[in-house]
Length: 96
Image (tube, rainbow, N blue to C red; front, side, top):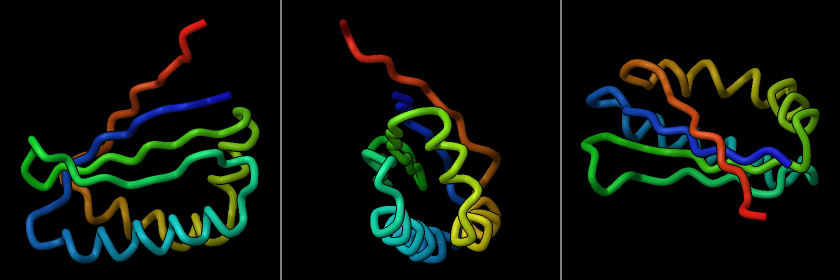
């Protein structure tokens, strides 16, 4: 299993675009990727224009397949264009 939280900041004036694209991508992921166990964007309360996406995949291969879908190729560049800087992934491991 692969789980992470990616945090990002959105450019001023681009929040509406970002939210629209994030919702469109989430809808496609949930409808087409059974090996994507969780995929949800969040607005961060304590960071101005801060957002995060929580992603959980059944395997690293499932995460790679996610990144190779046509809808990811279509939507991701525009999502990334909304960012002020880049995103930072924090990988999460379950407690055993």
